[in-house]
Length: 88
Image 1 (cartoon, rainbow, N blue to C red):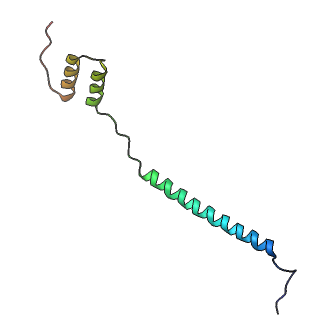
Image 2: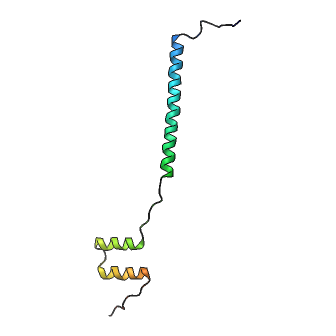
Image 3: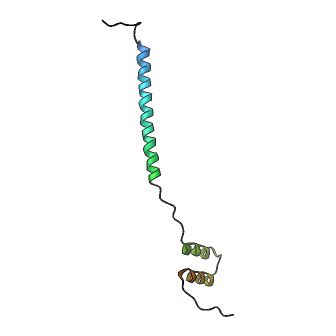
């Protein structure tokens, strides 16, 4: 024999239980989607590509900060080549 306490769950009880379950599973699914997106973005990041000294020198030459003679002299210095001696 079963013992019942009160009239049991009515229509509002079933409605609240349904709404609660929908909200629960919605939060679980949205949480999983957010976790997957976070892990994909964190794993997909490539390290910053740093400009080489030659690239920086070429940028300075392109902006007009240094002239061609200075550019070529510094480029030769970077590559370890000795250029012609500067006459004074």
